[in-house]
Image (tube, rainbow, N blue to C red; front, side, top):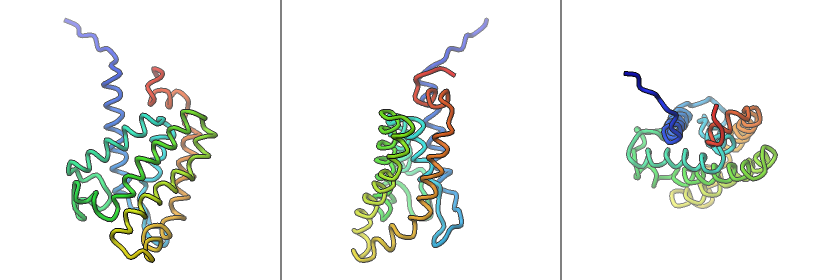
Length: 187
């Protein structure tokens, strides 16, 4: 008896989301030596999720990552050492995690609506959104006059490099790949 395997859009989407969560987790765990502080690669991956996959995929991918983290899986930077689950998310970096979701939505919307040029123009706004939400949340944990020094300034140079890297990779992504991730074309 022969079993025919059919392509399943739901299975494909699920596998893409699992791969996205794995990639986001890996990007959170890699520490790249950088001045003045080591950096992770999360910003690159978050921006790519929306830039290459569009708003729907970007939000689903980052949302699934946040749900996995909220459920206690050690997917975030510094986990499990710095805590797990909702307790970690309610800590000083929680605003940045929400900023990731907003950034994926913004860059994805710009890519969907205006193509690669729109995506490129949206990248700085996405980085600003991450900083604004992250710094606003961080202000609950550090004195107001220290928020920029602790939560923004040390990361700007590295994040600008990561933003440019995400833009270059998104521009280089073949249309067939972006269409496949968006679910609009078979590869």
